[in-house]
Length: 280
Image (cartoon, rainbow, N blue to C red; front, side, top):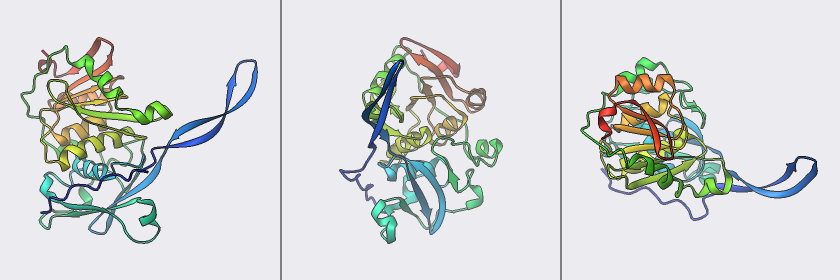
């Protein structure tokens, strides 16, 4: 296996783009101005020559996105499963860096029929193309973790994540995800136009670095959905916290798989929907 680390993003990797707009205010004429938009471009993930997925994402940390995607889709389970990740160097794709080739170890069984997502996945809807809820639940065992977290730490997480949302500050149009340790220290934070991509990038960074995530807390800037809980389960993460509300299916999934699910994390208050024993 190669220990080669993922290639760093290019200094000019665009995450926002300037746009001409007209601002409107009641009883006043339109006023020309400029604003910034979050960049959204397609990225294709190929494994052993096969196209696994095309996802709409914000460019940057693409290697982590690919690794996190393959982890949460059950294609890989260990860092040694991935030998190398490299951008396609042929044709137009080489200019835009929108195709990634993932090289797996020879002993990794690539069964495309096991994938729970179809080849195309939008940035905003991680559940699109899921074969079935049951198939996802059967891919990964329930969380086995003795992690306990002081309840006073939980309210501090959103502000810590917010400080790492530079592109959101500029555009107002990106989701974010972060991983913390039990003491509330931020380990990694990532932004993306798709909330599922932001999660995959965060998970991918820790996975490629060879870190276990069974003692991590996943924090997301939006709501806690079923697919967010599935990704956390694939990584073995015991606690998931979200600024907004969880869906009913997310709560059901968390309870069935031994996950602690926190929602409406705002100010000094939050709700615990599953696994309250982990919050002290």
